[in-house]
Image (tube, rainbow, N blue to C red; front, side, top):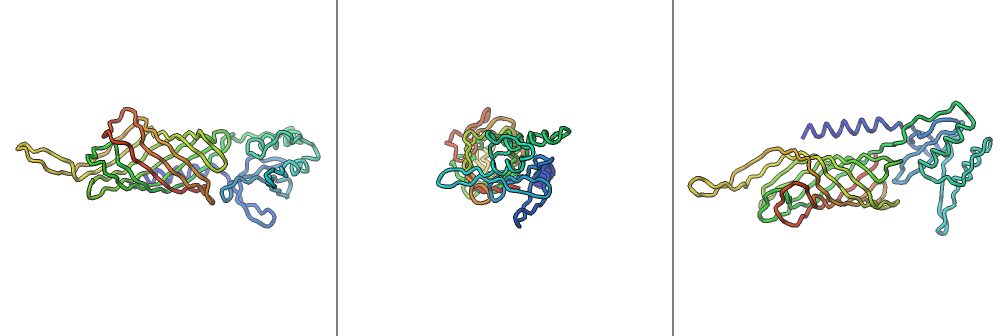
Length: 292
């Protein structure tokens, strides 16, 4: 357990260190922003209270790029703001959108026009981190569960995302604890590496396929049935660890709520190359995660 916590902590610190952030004051409000492009116009951004916010800095002035909605129609104020900022060397705003990739391309074009020596060698991938906690139930179909008993579960997710080019993909490190009860005395600690493909993605809802392709499980059960040489049946304890590299598939959804995301997962629906107890899989988790 201590090793798992240390690994999670190391990955969290290493990923966070890749994302340079600085505090700026805009219209009297302080924001912690990431630098996407640095030049004559510097492009800044972050997710603030669950929303993507973009800012353009020229000289000592910082202006937010907005796109408010009135009577169901977007006003696209950000285009007028960009036109003002680039008035000394105009760049067309006809095809620019209020997305990080589109704004980056626009700002790069302007910076190159006013400064031929400008270059933006920043990687096109922008990593983000989401940390979540969850609880749920499971019938542990990949174990001997003779009465198909439902057991409580709980754990944490550490999700690594790319907010630029790979928005439909993420990698998740999950720690899941299964708790035994009087009916089925089975306890298990599992650390797993998962890949998620978000085949439905909107501003408020993502629906994804989860593939667990590597996991390590340490389990203990106190009701393992053993037949003695004389024919008597006894209950004994057994424990041990198991490393699994088979594909195990599930489904899930993230719903934007407040400053984070409410998430639901249906886990361990199908496992390739794994023996199940032939029961219908029941393994649900409900949790909440935030951007770090």
